Image (tube, rainbow, N blue to C red; front, side):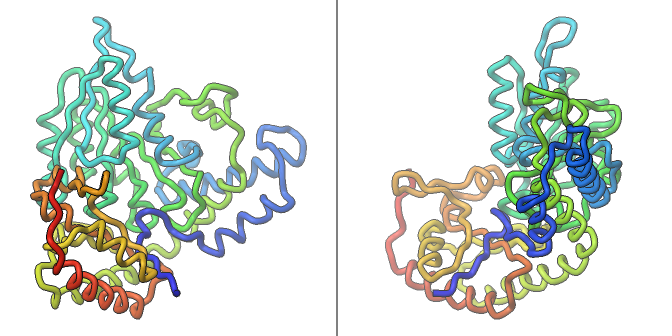
Length: 388
């Protein structure tokens, strides 16, 4: 059976050119970048070249880029920074604002802060799948220490008005953390245009390797290393650098910078072909179709079926998609993201996320549409499950 992959928001296959850049550091080249001898110096040069490549993609200074293990680590590092939430002169631990549909690496880190006494405010998206800057501004308090808003929602694909939101926060001197993991390499991401203070990315979302990411920190801002140890990454991330992963991340960043327009046009073409094909489907609803979106992401409810069952049926045919509803103990539960934007349970559990990639073709899109048509018709004949 041929297997077709339509889940590029979960992870992307590594570009062969990225692997080519990485291989020497897996097969023969070696050295600790902190070592003073020639092996260490060569490793340091490779790391700094990659830092320049990532900085170029972001429109940033290389010295403000910190390499780490993932977008999750970057988000955790900023949110759990004890310097930011150490308490004011009266000892109050402070307040944090975040979007209700942030990645779990933000939500779980905020929950850890709450254990320390930090108060939080969740801002829900509108029916358009976007966070309103005015809603964030209304949530700010005198003791707000940080605002967290992702650039692109990983489920809906909607792009958030981060620049406007960050400008309002800047007027009050409140820093903004932007999780740009899902956006980098797919749409232009320029830190100065966004106006944020911290930005995170992960290599495996734009044809780099898993297990490596980067945190950009605005000059004048700082973080304490989440890991305790030596002073790598200018004291901002302890641990010996993952040279092969960092080299690969740099290569992926350079390719994304060079090919961004071409990639976006190609991916948008696949998505638009897919959504045009849905016009013949009864009761298929494309969510947030009129909102600014990532060029490759389509989030669709096939009313009358359960997204989880439809996903598994497609998997049996060799097609990988993602569901907008998580299932537990055999009973479907609506996605927290979809509930936050006001969808009813029936529509939420009927949803799928399809995310295209550079390895997909128009023929594959057509085959996906044919498989969907057959499986939706089959599943609609079955009685609907009861929600827990």
